[in-house]
Image (cartoon, rainbow, N blue to C red):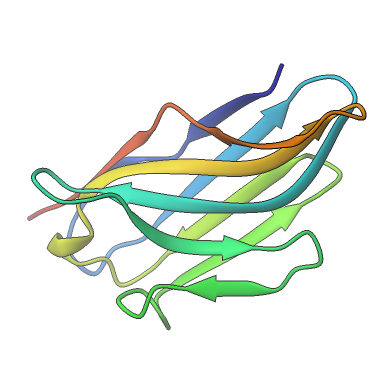
Length: 120
């Protein structure tokens, strides 16, 4: 029903930048809040950033001032611009989207994850 396709991960040196993208697809789709989580090896999944359908944003303290979340509703896409990357940002990054299909209930949908590795 709803598919989320992420892209933009990779290997970057400390201090570098990456931009993640997550595109939602599906018919009769209504998108609400979207966001990014990450999970490092041996750690719990944590919220990185979220954005409401109206553009209100929320960030984890660890990424404030370095990461910027945005969305393009016409493209059904959410972005995460990551600057000044640190080794501790290394994780598998997951996109999440709250969506309704037609007149159905709202559910949370997850992407497959994209790896971000920050290392020299």
